[in-house]
Length: 138
Image (cartoon, rainbow, N blue to C red):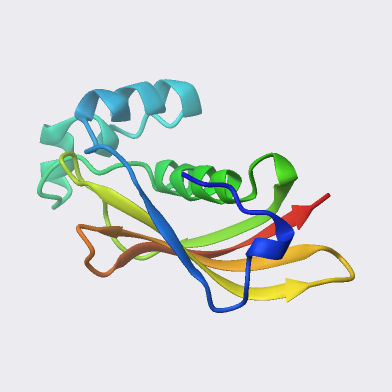
């Protein structure tokens, strides 16, 4: 993934998506341990099915982390991600291949910030996690 300088980004630009490898169940178990979120709907198929899910689902914050990674790669060493806000609108399952998308929606010269519309989709389908990010440039 290429990083972009302040001058390279223009309002309306759609940046190359960051495609994550397929979600694996072991990744969800590791994330549960790292995050402290041990809700069994993320790690145990039987429990997930008892509550009406087809299988375990990924933690929403895992998707948010993927968007943070994408925004961080866009700004690279030229600045930092100063804001990230998301809303979860769909479930992520083991085996899903997720694409992180970003579009430049604003640029402020005075604060040297770039605003992004960000979202995650599964196999180029409907957005599963939708949000906004702000990049602050040095």
